[in-house]
Length: 446
Image (cartoon, helix red, strand yellow):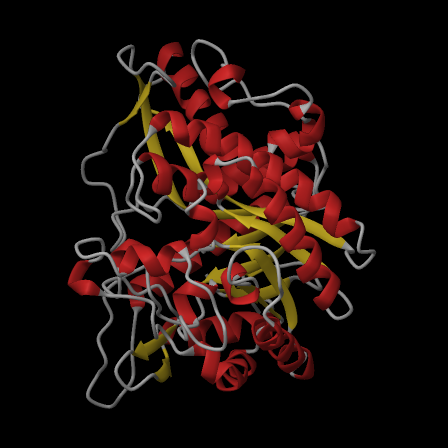
């Protein structure tokens, strides 16, 4: 009998993203995305890696659904490529693009796997970026139209949807740090873009509900355990400011129609580009909350920081993943409990997993004990949060298979299935076999 168990009906799945697995970057009428442009710019991604082919899921989706069946998945979280369906971001629908997702949904349903689509997982049409991207208010209107049309066409078979994946991530990494597409470094533009993305999230939520197809609607938010470096009041306040900005900036807005108090000097609505009537548009409460969580951040007060007055402290001897994330399983428990206590909505863990180097043995097997250990420890903390009263309804492991890891190219492997990117051969790893048993038993010995 498992010593870590989950409620009856708990939903077990895996998550992926369109650009990271689909390939077929310019086939069947698909338009250029900001990631297509980014990776084809020399020097952006190590080794010149691109997602042009990635896992070739566009052509191999039937085999990949069979893989999901072999793993025993109840559900599959994937994303829809906006430029595959609307090459210019607006205007005429590309039928071959939307048909691909219709066929994928049908294949999943035939296999008894519940589809959970994400409407936007970072691949903005380049045509909209050329007009300003997420820093242009018109993008919010274009996203509202796109979201309505996609849900209207697939909603006869799909009843649960995610609007965004990690909105803070695609704005901060894309418009502030310049590490991700579109590769811009402009703090003023980034702050305006957070507000426009917030408007887009709420506008899209209202629009897709008007289709009459949606039974449950959420977004997947990047969250982390944020802890003070010391017990001082200053460090605790700095950690709280960081928590509000990183974890709540796009959640508090749609739930309660206001920005969380994250900035030490108060929120500057002019800096955000808030116009009359905007704040009234933000509130459109979700039906559930998606949490993407990987690790921990330690924060100290920093009077020199003009914004959050907080700086990250790198702890010595901290256990870290291949992506240099601080492994701290208690973080997923702590964040779940706080979000549950503060918002009282059902929660799905929409991403959790880790990257470590994997080696294919001579007999063709792939053992990954570090990933397995990580998953055991984090899932035990999810169960602990449920035991504490949090309504956590499902867990979507990141990720189904090794893929194109954004600005890291193919150097990082998060999958529970190994992919040979030259042959496209899939091999279930030790962690994948273990996860299959967890799903079967609805728990595990630990």
